[in-house]
Length: 302
Image 1 (spheres, rainbow, N blue to C red):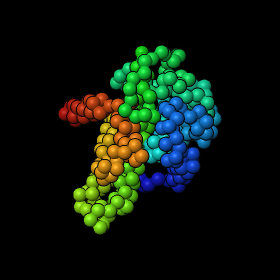
Image 2: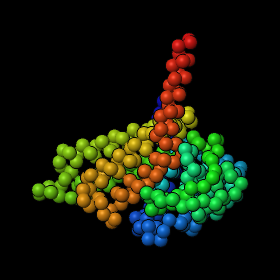
Image 3: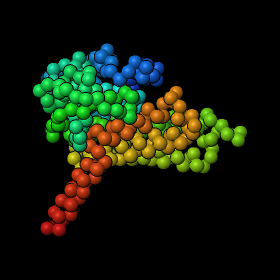
Image 4: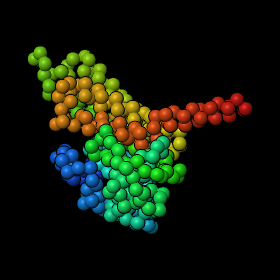
């Protein structure tokens, strides 16, 4: 069995990376911070035109006609650049909410385990709800993910796919923090040599890489099987890789990492928020425990 990406899948990933590098590089990220947390409607439409939201919509309905394995590759790239906005919800709404597939509509969704919803103030629709409810803004750790408290629930049919795509975003962020840490470790010098030559820094960077690659493997596998337990495991691993990776990257940066100019804190804050979206660690652990119990019970009756 060949587990490598196909050429078409590599082309999809390369195309999205090129698009985001040209349209949402570091300067654009910083501009978003200065402008505020509102969704960039022009960028949203460009993503729609590129097929970001209609990727899994059948070609007969105007979509690209691909599947979850390709979708996680695309969302991984979005996670690398910290692309803001309710990407997952709008993607899931393609073909359901008018304008979602083309990026002319911004669609958000409620969290699975709580009454919080991101980007409610600028949303045209909420996934699974007839209209956008009124809400109360609450403080968010991430300056580019505004949160609101409002009445509503997340429809069951979207939960697994949403958790997997969020995990892919986390993987992209985790891989990016590895790159940031390694690059800084090669540039920053102490005692006449790059800090990357010190064993403690090497261990931090290698641990970040291992966690990120393990999480990426789990996300790719879950995208192929679509198994709810494997998706829960992938989300659990991806959340850990993103949060711990950003923390370790901050450790490599030292005092510089605590400044507003460094991007490390943005990855950590986004990872914190995503870890509470679609499926939390507690929820994932419960689902995995139930799956293991069911498997053990089935084995004992054979």
